[in-house]
Length: 110
Image (cartoon, rainbow, N blue to C red):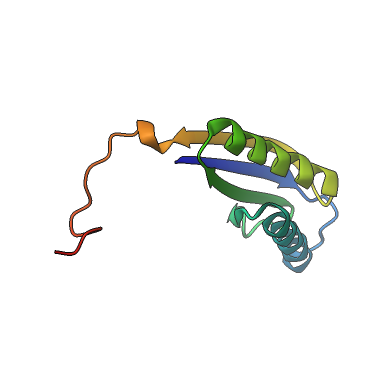
């Protein structure tokens, strides 16, 4: 399984208060969830009315597919033009490469 995470830091110059910011955050998150079936959340800057930090995650079975999905999400959010994207961070991990330790008590029931 491959897991990818995308974090977008955005500047919302026209927001005058947190209510206006929340409206933009909700719009972006709802649109991304609907179009890409990705997990999405505000992950930082919650108390700052001109800064948005949004996180998105997707999973799949190929690194290229997950990476492409994250790139598409970033381009989609930029094209929405609801806020200026000032930083993009992407991380893709292939979980089969991780050293797994068996989880105690999870999985099989004897």
